[in-house]
Image 1 (cartoon, rainbow, N blue to C red):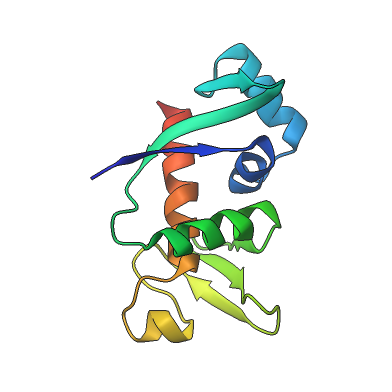
Image 2 (image 1 turned 90 degrees about the horizontal axis):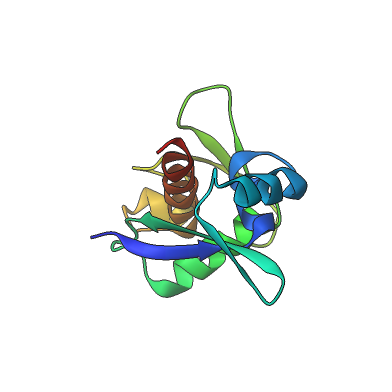
Length: 125
């Protein structure tokens, strides 16, 4: 089941690998579904995050905002930094090499990939 998610311009910029200014431009010209609240753009889209606990979604948003997840040269594959910054993991929407992912548990790295995918799908629509 899809849930409406709102992201800041910095989180959205990280998801697309572009600058915050580019996201602001997209919001202004209607390329992204966005509204201005208290003078700031808020980007809305639907994402399927039912498999992830709310804490994982919060950590995924932080991971995006601080640039802790990057696309690799392989489509759909990302490199994510651990929460303490000591190691990196290979992440796909269906699996992750982190300790939770190896136990088939939903991890925040996969939640971040789900957010990226949903944001990119929303922009393409």
